[in-house]
Length: 283
Image 1 (cartoon, rainbow, N blue to C red):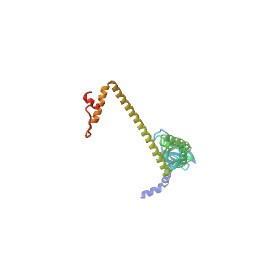
Image 2: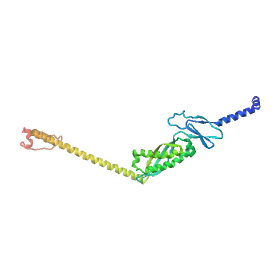
Image 3: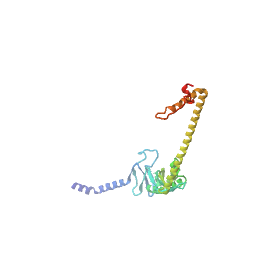
Image 4: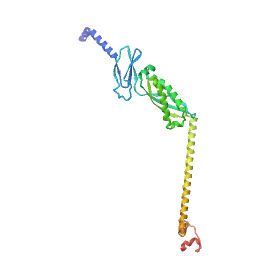
């Protein structure tokens, strides 16, 4: 303890000077990680950008690490470099066929010009606040041009792309790029509109089923009539070629249907000279 006390008394000025230097050096350094862009602002004006987002450049190659700054003159503003989410509150939208829809949507964006973002919005949260009403307006306008049915088809993707393009043009004013816009859900409101839509859908499916059933019956009748005509033609051709054989064949079919009934107790009384039995006589 005495040695430390003596050292402090002897080297007090040097120790204080070293501590001041260390504090000064620490205040000149700032660590910028890979997921952050840093804008160095000198006396209120952006001076330079560290670790700026650049497409197709791997992590570790954009300048992240230690940044030097002038204490009290330069301030480092950190800007998120990652893709950010913008959620839209659930709202009602009127479609082109006058149906009210409950729509949930979201957008994804990133900051590509941090200097412009710092000058116009200041923070990424402020950018999201500015873009949200623009997304709501663009969604209303675009879906107002389309019917409810089109949102259930591939046309929905075209609508989303047009909304993304319109929102992206506005986002560029804040140094942001809109990457994607998607609708999570687009439903009819609960109550009468939803019940009416279900009723119309059920009626349409029933009409479609009745049409398919009628078409099937028509096709079956055509096939059956064609088969019967073909059979009649075949019988006629056979009769014309050999009338005696055809008469014999038809008689055998009639005998089989009349006499070969199992379990039948019906009695048939015929005269031996009956014309019906001529095939038994070899005539």
